[in-house]
Image (cartoon, rainbow, N blue to C red; front, side, top):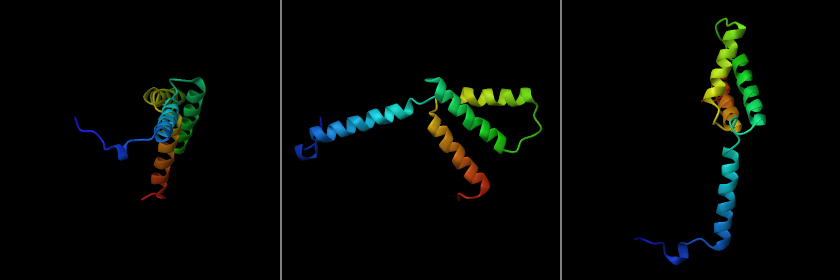
Length: 99
């Protein structure tokens, strides 16, 4: 089995830093509507703002609610910060500020 030369292996300090970084990333990825009601509320705000910003055909209250529920179901396991970033990028592309 191939192994790394000893000069390329991680020191205990480097290993500790990597383990802390991985823990931080896991924590960020767990910030989903499925995991916590506050993340669900924050995601709902992001989705609602997106729906209000995008032009749509005339839609009644029931249709708007169904659309919102569909978005929330699809985004249930996506971190809120990722949804917000995607919405920002989408809006920037729609406005022509991103190429």
